[in-house]
Length: 83
Image (tube, rainbow, N blue to C red; front, side, top):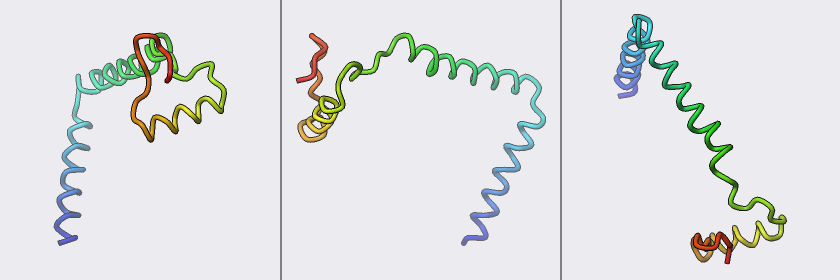
């Protein structure tokens, strides 16, 4: 059983390894995809997504997290305040 799983994983690994070795346009496309992911999750996050608990003290943060775990999501979006 373990031998057949090892053989299957080995053949899958060789399939992908050989496929990536023989790529011509594929490498450029993968680099473009990775660059887009870095831009989307790295750069845009910094400019468009503010931390929800920015400016809160450690005590306020711990109260918010504790209430959120016990009562569910307690963030009211209409006035951007934790309750």
